[in-house]
Length: 292
Ligand code: MN
Image (cartoon, rainbow, N blue to C red; front, side, top):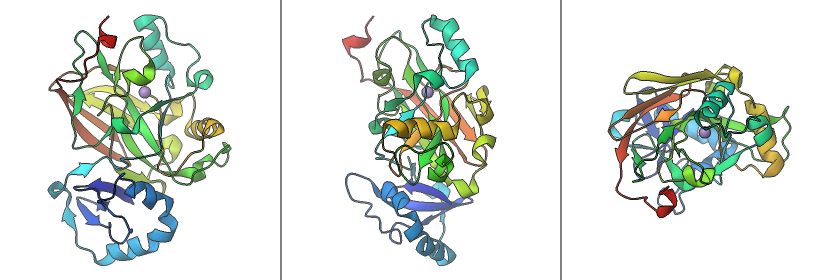
């Protein structure tokens, strides 16, 4: 299934260029706050799946172009992100500022992005007003956790994946705390939907790419990861309990670079999804902490 959030936080199943509203059959109150409907659906998917599939047989199809897709999981318990997880990206960052750890993700571990940085395929990336600072795109795979757990072994890890999505990790380059540089609202576009593992390529067969204004900037395969997907789950769950709906960002390959007002990003993960993201310069976000 391709599960999406749309319009006023309704839940839908995408089929071709249509979407089926399954909010009611999934028992989701789309008006509830906090907006945890998709997290609850993921947590209860085995119980809800038969009714959802039965609903798909008869329910009306809505043209995808008639709805506004939102980020599929608006309120996950956490977004875990692996830095420096492709050798070629470590090399490009070393040549940039010479100060990046040479360990990579295998010796460095992960960080967190706030759930409030999540945005969707219909939302622009809004650049904060931090004159003179470079803001970069990082093309990444989002791994969505299905069954939670702690101390998950590498061998069991794949059983805990619900699905995949596209993710852009946006960051102000610099020496301030990494989490702050990556925490602005709209600095974590995820979407356009979650493709469940049964419909997605095998974890080690996934490829991803990102273009800006039609020009290819990043392209990589998961076979090039330093910490592969099972090990990301093992490492993360050795520290923190993974919950249904948690998102793990894979780390980015080489080719990162600045984004600016008016740019259009296109991220594509064959067999998972693709989305266009517009970049807008915002007025807010300035603080003297950035003024160096
Ligand atoms: Mn990243």
